[in-house]
Length: 273
Image (cartoon, rainbow, N blue to C red; front, side):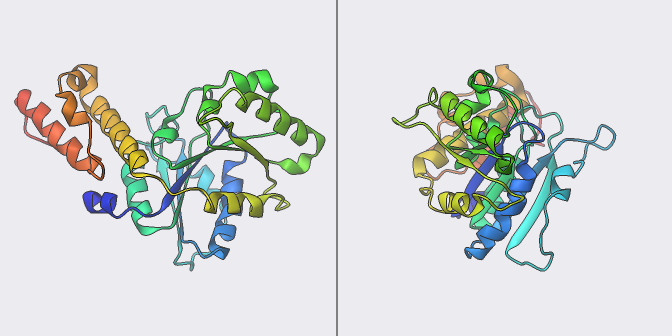
């Protein structure tokens, strides 16, 4: 199923990342009706902190999202981050692949992240970094490794006025150091409470270029490497023929992972799980 879904992906995955409490869930809740009004089907993957007792998601992010339970064009799923430190869950890539094959837009909300959790950049087609007014000056933004990955930045809670405008200026200054392809990421100001900037942000997301075959191949190879590293460690990954980690355009990373795992398990004298 996953191999077929990989070949049928037509949707765009948008990753929303940023510090805890910045307003990611509230922003997602505001984007859902705007995207649905534009005629797009939407899936949401909310990566929540894990329960220490059950290991499951605490569902705090999902609880902040309002949705119509009868809407057949909307699906929201929470998953637990568990022991993953990149802001995503281990099953994020398979879930995102299925969602991209079934929905037009996939919104990925990461766990509240700090300064170096950038795993979403390897999976999403578009990364939106969310900041909030009063969270720090431009120097604080500059030292945050997570600011190096966005395609677009959003200052949430823009209804706070002058402090929000200062945050926009600080973020623009920080992103000026993260120029890619001759251009720094744009910065938008949004207030989910007042609806300020939501329509403009929605238009930006919908007009974003479709992911290229090269991007899909890079995503596949990044996931393949991380999956094998998690399962077999550095030594296991290093023992593989490098050709197994380089995929042709359109190749399924899930099939490649199964084949590589079968090879490594055979060397260990163990049957595939």
